[in-house]
Image 1 (tube, rainbow, N blue to C red):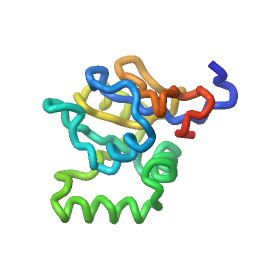
Image 2: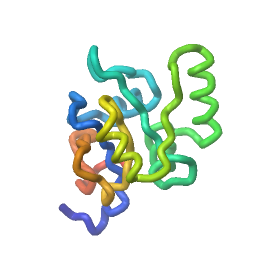
Image 3: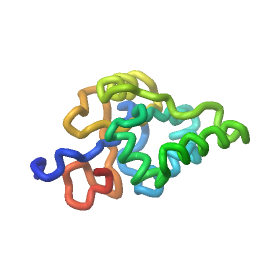
Length: 139
């Protein structure tokens, strides 16, 4: 793997029992926008998002949400107000916390620096590519 040039890739990690291995970028958007709320009948999606100013949060806002910080906050306030979602994404304060919660909570999905992926989570392919591969969209 050509790690030299892709050290900054952001990996999508999920609980190991999550029944998904590959998502298109459009499917990743649906999950993070709260439009897909269940992986299957028994496993709800649990969104874990880094706190503001974290590089992973900037990547998720720019690449997945295509929103500014204030637009993101307004989006979730409106979504909860309209009862389209019970809760906003849970805020995590470090990559360690993202990994720990993703490995502990069934259905959890988080973004973490590829260099900080820990055992106990599963890395999801995006558009068929893993972090570090050419064309991987989350950098």
